[in-house]
Image 1 (cartoon, rainbow over the protein chains, first blue to last red):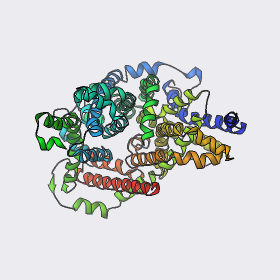
Image 2: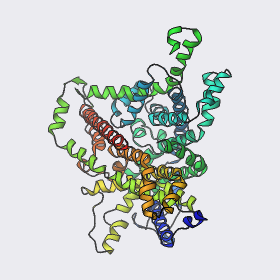
Image 3: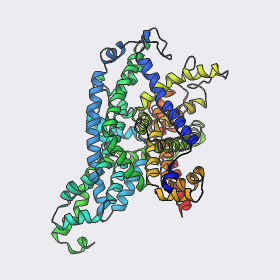
Image 4: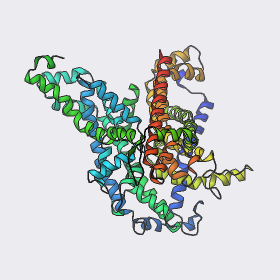
Length: 278
Length: 294
């Protein structure tokens, strides 16, 4: 009875909520509207204006693929992104497992060092990083884009937090039954932390798909470019190609929206699990 | 631990296992993050350019940086950029509250507000460059329709910083919204109801019951977003491309020193100073939060 009355919200608050929701949605979407506007404009529209229906065209999209040469970078980005996400999730989970569960000499030191790597901006270490990659014969290769950032301190931290929230009885029971560390990791830890791992996977995908600076430094031949590098190059060229770059960037957002929609349920569970722990 | 003392084969194998799990990740971090950091610290004490070096010069790079004005100016801009943190926090907390109390269409709203998070920084910056265009961009057009003066978003200080901050806030608030949303969902319903039954209004309930229970998330978001603000690069690199470097922040300065000036030693010293500042800032922030929680 009581709860029924307390749940009804005053009307002015409902209106305020709807208005705020609309405003936030407009803020979130407005820049994308202009992006799409430039992407579908024909050459008669100034780049900063929105086209009228009569001025719309789809030629920029085919132009982006062919004249803009974005097809190859698109594929390169797909390869880099998938491998990076898989590596990051697997390596981070593996490293987090002993940090969350075992007591061994040097554990806390290792963990502090891992956290310290979070504070290093990649731009600061660009020169030595570049020299290392050249020495390893990874310059101008997709492997050179992926391997240096194959695992992040953030990922290890996230996985450790998730694993610590799993009741110890779960893996102790498995260990008593004679399971090896690997089996405990594979059959207890990985499935129970799946929402966090999925979240980490999605964020690796987003980060890798967006990464501009490092690929810009390490890739030289245009056949190896990732999508952001190719877009940056297109922007730097003739203004005729600007609309191709905008069409290309619309195409660059679509896979990310798709992955968000596919993973939405996991993502929200993962974010909730991670954040509640603080 | 018994494993060390007994030396039993099973136990010593046990002791090796943690390192087996850690090895691949540690190898990557040591090779590509820690070793380069140590190398940068070494370079910062050397004369090292695209053509010559590294040759040991002691503190010369640091002396030159501290005596010069460019580095301090960009560093000051980095600290001004921290103003984006309260903006992001206010925006994401509002968004979380709105999403939390939106029953119908909540899922669509969450998708729309998360859209900026999944948008690559270069794409976000490209769209904002169009909006911020100084001659006929939509924002300046709207300002002049309202009879307000035009703003030189992409070339004039401090608007260059503000433009990039708007992009940062736009790209970031959806993520932090999810963090706050998690916190809001975790607030026990009974607590809110008890406060309401006690006669507390909606606003007072939010202020005295909901907000305090969000404290861990507020701390988390403040820390993460301010480290991000001090490290900002992408938004400035694309959005205000071409603006003088003194209109930008520390990390773009470091990149400029590396890529255009080819002065690796100087850039290394700039990087080390920035790292020390971020570290000190983070430790102070954590300490303040701990004191407040105690």
